[in-house]
Amino acid sequence: MAKRDYYEVLGLNRDAADDDVKKAYRRLAMKFHPDRNPDDAKAEEKFKEASEAYEILADREKRNAYDQFGHAGVDPNAGGMGGAGFNGSFGDIFGDVFGDIFSGGRSAGRSGRARTRGADLQYNLQLDLEQAVQGDMVEISPLVRVACEDCDGSGAKAGTSPSTCPECSGAGQIRVAQGFFSLQQTCPRCRGNGQVITSPCRRCGGRGRVEERKKLSVRIPPGVDNGDRIRLTGEGEAGVRGGPPGDLYVQVEVRDHPIFVREGRHLFCEVPFSFVDAALGGEIQVPTLTGRVKLKVPPETQTGKLFRLRGKGITPVRGGPVGDLHCKVVVETPVKLTEQQKQLLRKFKRSMEQGDEEHSPKESGWFQGVRDFFDGLKS
Image (tube, rainbow, N blue to C red):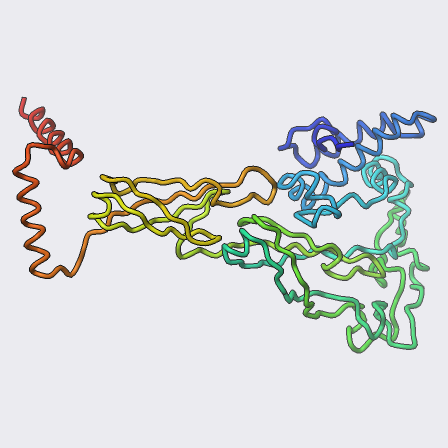
């Protein structure tokens, strides 16, 4: 069954602000929460649907991916274009949204030792037009913070382990009394980790992570364009305290091509043509991204004339019809003429001037327009 549009699920416009996303989810979560609708399968399904929509639209990276690619951009099984799929906990989402309303809930009681997901990273990848249009497999070497092998990501020297923070007893937070009130704040000794390292790992200095260059293979799907992103799940920074790694987003940048200019799914190029062939008509070999094709140019073709070769453009990465190749004829003036060639052209020019037929309609029309313009100024 096809999923509904996430904006439709939350009843929002596509330009909705982050606060509007949160408010819309609160309203639906309160209405369809299973505790309020026991034994109601439809209400439970609507609650899960709203939670899934919120997890995507509340995350800026995932929302951008969804706006670009739709559900395919946030489906980890759809080739990795653009985003991340729903992999959170409905209960955690509910607690995150309502934690600022109901004190003492899951959010308030969380320990500072909770696992932290690694940061997402971006890698800028330049491609030739042929690679972007036809697809390719590319090797990249991003600099990424990975779990330290010497301490297995704990930050403690081999043979030792982190110990419980004596200041907060492992809670990661301490309570500070101020008059009648009691405030909770991050433990200053362990900085919210709940643990302290007395013998830090020499390689990572107790951080649990080190920088390394990864060697990764990236499959470039056919039809990508400038600004498209390819998501490599789990190839971002390593998580903290055993948390899951982030993702790596490969940002595509297509280099300029010496022959073709791309506009969406269409290609454009200029084809030089001699003025003799343009006048008499002829045939020319035109390059395409898949080989050469013959283009017949009819007699009396003017410079700037566009010829369309259907289906010789680009297949869009998100589907749709194949684009076309548009060839613009550029009539070329001959250079480095011999004296004999010059004489022939002068003879040809005299024959054009003596004839009764109008051989240069644009030129005649332009001069007539100039005369009409000056005659109008005199009157």
